[in-house]
Image (cartoon, rainbow, N blue to C red):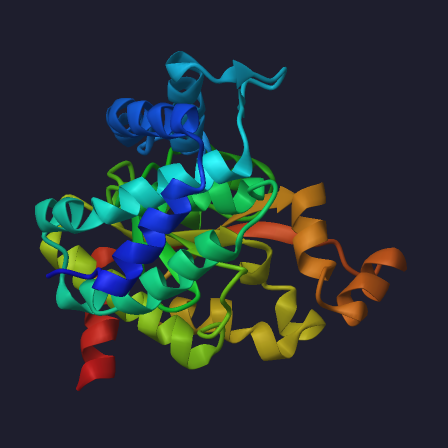
Length: 307
């Protein structure tokens, strides 16, 4: 399936052409060097690892290094690198043998991402850079119009053990063994640039897409996510978001408490004055929970949705 139109290819070429000759050489070298190490790094629990490998390739190709280990390169160079990889994406998708539920989402996503690259100026926001590296290399794929799915994500036993030691119950540890959760999982992430599907129907679409992927990848344990919005507290704090946890749990997913943190608080309060006020008065502490939906249960749920 060719997911790139001539118009999109022309726009991607224009993004690359913004660079001076030296920049184009640097981008081309890094585009060739980075995919292998980035693909190996994609199985790490740290979502930033593929982008870090790309930074290392950029430095090896001639870019300077910043104190934090990132490459000292312009946003235009980063956008050009993503543009080069998007042009090669159809070949990568052919190798991945993705189901139509995923492939059918690509035209929409490529329109959005190509426009983002075309309109971008200045720095490349780091959160978007991390996600776009994975997307352009087919390490993450569309799940719906507001969610992406990482194709391989580890779940170690440590969090289920900490859950139990923290007095939150033994069921996650039991489920970890029962469902052989040490196998890789699909992992979902919300795309804050495009929230068209951040609603009950969109999340159902994402979980159904995950189920379609699981049918083609028997080695995967299931699909999972981790966020403040899987927190059971939302039943009273933000009832309109309770479906994000309650619907999967009703379909057989299980939960693991990960804990609070500054990042979770920031994300939970950025769009909600109500949650922000509750945090400020000590009524609410945003807490991240991992939600794991075993493959058999998720596939059965999705088949029920389709019937």
